Image 1 (cartoon, rainbow, N blue to C red):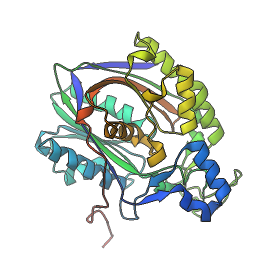
Image 2: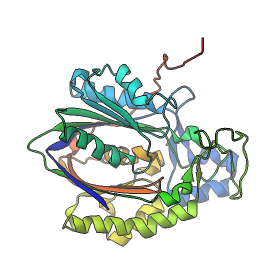
Image 3: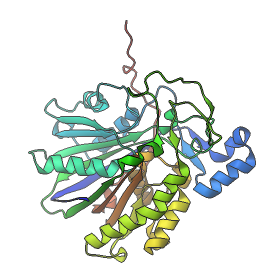
Length: 361
């Protein structure tokens, strides 16, 4: 089991941006019928999601989130020594979208810059990666951008997923701080289950798959370029295995659930979250659930839930256990203390990069 502890590096700013278009779950009555929609709302807890329009990408949301941080805390782009983007919906197959954002944000050429392709556990993997870069270099300030537009890779005819997943972009500022505490991490990967959540086509393994949407064995309509999730197996992983891993992590930290102010979990499904809380004996007031408003926003769900928590009168330093789990399949956890006053209010944007389109002409 991979574990790590990193000292003297802290989160000093967090910004989350949503698109302006809100889609209420009840508006899907005409697509799937009232009975089916009400059942999905009841099971998942999702009452609305936010969706980007065609030209707007994950990087556009991340760009605005980063700008918000720069303006709020008077941060010069010149001071950023690393920029890492976590996303599974990049602008292009190549180059790395982080390079595009380095250019757009006017961050210096003397910058470590790359993408990480990871979903549900991506925020914690990104946090660990950036903190490690800083710990082993002369970088004093770095930017972790985590953004996702899952609505663009889900069939609108797929009732199992299209009502649940929403788009979001986030920016997290990290700085060296000799007075800060320790961030602890733990990771697991179950690659033998890679087909449980997958977009079968679009890469180079299945290049010429048809984009025609047809009825799949589970009764949903999608193409091989759309996201598929084996709901039952992912559900079992989440409620049977994830609580065990979190419990192991707490034990490794030589503490107990009562030591944490909040448990910030990946917003996979409201029922799943409540089952995990029940198994770990977590008080409901320590488990914020943001997916009622935002849906499952993939890698951004943990920072978005932190912002949701801050908007609900959470102030001061809070010790949090963060855990992400899902696509990969993968799992991650972190024990961190962060200043809730450094989390910005959630904003909305429809801005997009007009110079991003590329033509052979």
